[in-house]
Length: 130
Image (cartoon, rainbow, N blue to C red; front, side, top):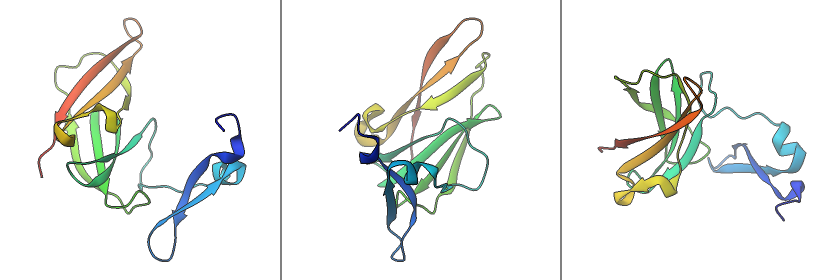
């Protein structure tokens, strides 16, 4: 089914009970549903066992921003903005996943990319506290 585009489902909103609403194929892809109320690019979203919540993470103005929600469909709230002192290369695409979580999700690895002075990737780790 990986080649069957109509089999893919996209999060398109929340139903009346607050649960996720999904739509498959081009209809789902074309429907916009913002999860957080600010401009975002190259974000990552995954479930974190330690917090028992979904996490959205992305980098903006040199800081890693984290948002959490009990439901994949939201609502999300910003819970952290992490400065990265000592990082002297321009980074983008801070990606992570459940598989990059350690210690039951308490530690999370993020992969950031840079194009200067040459293309490279870097691994960063954060430790969560409840």
